[in-house]
Length: 122
Image (cartoon, rainbow, N blue to C red; front, top):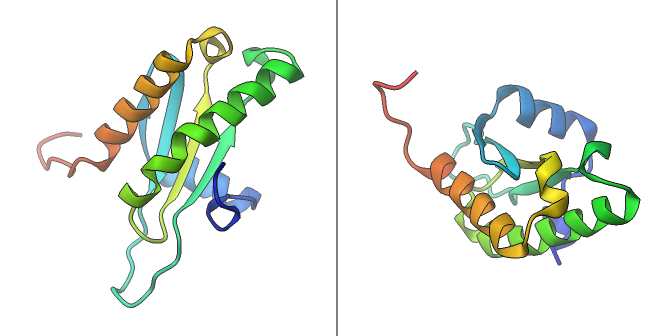
């Protein structure tokens, strides 16, 4: 389970991360990451939020996908910069995805976002 101090709860945080953060899409998930410009003294914990909409499945399926994503995101907390906002949005395919596929997609998207941005890329 994701620690409560790392759970995103405010709508403004979700909106900010989705609109201004970098994005990496995979077949089962889309990950948005916003890394704030902070001074080294500030040590706010990274916040992680999940968006699992109705096209993923009924309520049972959506809650199952959300729980699986929360479980998969926990080991990656130490990789996130302090004060960053991470939003994981499940695509409709996530409802039928095997746990290994979901884990691979999440890890691949995070690896892409946490790589240093190249200057030649737009």
